[in-house]
Each structure stands twice: as C-alpha cells, then as structure tokens.
Length: 147
Image (cartoon, rainbow, N blue to C red):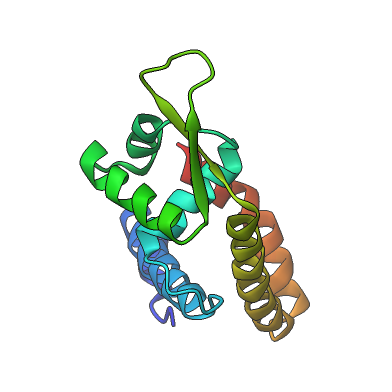
C-alpha cells in the first residue's frame, strides 16, 4: 500500500508508485484467470488476434515485440490447442493469416469474465470517492498505455 504520499508529489515518485501498483494489480488479475494453462505470451497473442480479427504472423510478432521464430512457436501451440487457425493470405500467397477460433473466443470470454468479476468485487469494497477517483483516472491510464 502507498504510505509515503510525499513521494507522489514528484513525477518520478508517481511513476514509481504507479509501476509498483500496476504490476501488483496485473499479477493479481493473472491469478484470477480461467483455468486454461496458457502462458502470458500465448494469452496476449490470442487477445491481439481477437482485437484485430485477422493478422499475419509477422504483424503479430511486431505487435507483441517478439522475434518471428518465437511467434511462430506461439501460434503453433495455440493452433495445436484449437484456439487459433491459419488461413491463406487473401492477396499474398506467400503468407498466411491467423484468426481466433470459436474455442479461442470462448476461452477469452471466460478469461475476461473471471478477471472482471474479481475486479468488480474489489471495486465494491472501495468507498464511492475511491471509485470516482478511479473512474476519472481510467481514461488517463488508457492514454498512458497507448503512448
């Protein structure tokens, strides 16, 4: 818990506090995941394809900041589990695209539902003022995540 509010007055102190708090919250959310045994990279890859609907392996590698051979292995594991499927590229026969299967979509929905249920319960334990502060901060956090 943040105890030294003096440190929050500087940008460096705020950056440190946010880093620690967001990392801790991320770890807690990961523990609330549906029981699917995917790695963080596999889950991030599946989510990225779900958001973009269709991607090439090279686009995925760039998006996830991993080397193409590593992404190829991740895609193969997800395809093996029936969560992603490869299809011929619509305009370039040298490439393939990947899309999320129905099973992959179901897994992502379960994952999100589990995490959101846990987070909603935690939010319910906060005061109305604390929830209002988080509502005001949410767009700012979103902006930080896309910069």
